[in-house]
Image (cartoon, rainbow, N blue to C red):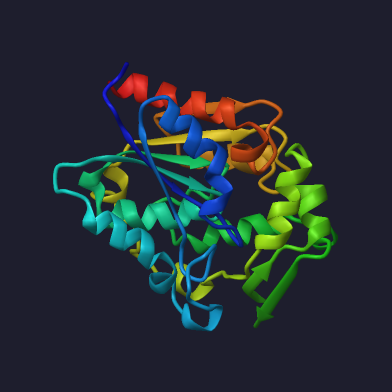
Length: 257
């Protein structure tokens, strides 16, 4: 067996650490350590949305966890969807503690432009009617906060996932801020820090949220060391295709060993 690695799993918008429950078990069964975190006002994190006014507040649990690592420990940091921004900020602050960053159908910013450019590109490609019963709060035409409705979850996000996971998601959704102002700032990411961390992108073929075309657009504009594909996976690959996702992560481990 390969030397034990430590996987740190970071959830996307409106979700929490709970969405990784299948993958956590699989990684541990494979002989590795795995930690899933709740970001601010997410999952069972006690903060409420009005207490998480900045992206720093939102990602504080991740940054506190990274700061707690022994100086010599390196983790495999996995970010799903919106968490691509979150792990990118962790890459900027703790590049030496990250062996590789895995972007699971996630926003993958470039150090040359503010992260907000990706959010704008996503909304430019997304028809308003396709958002269905998603509730988005806008200010000056910019999205402020979002919470996914049950119809959106069923027809866009959990299209290939088991029905029990869809029902779980309906019960556990919490609104998330978008932090457009924070992500509009120049110089959040640098080539010397963020750019020094190896990156892998996992494409989900049947994702109806981050459409495959958008995933490849990000990869082409910001090439990674490796791209992996999970066929038949919806946006929630950790629930629809947990075994395949685990195999992708274990392949990453093999190549690093």
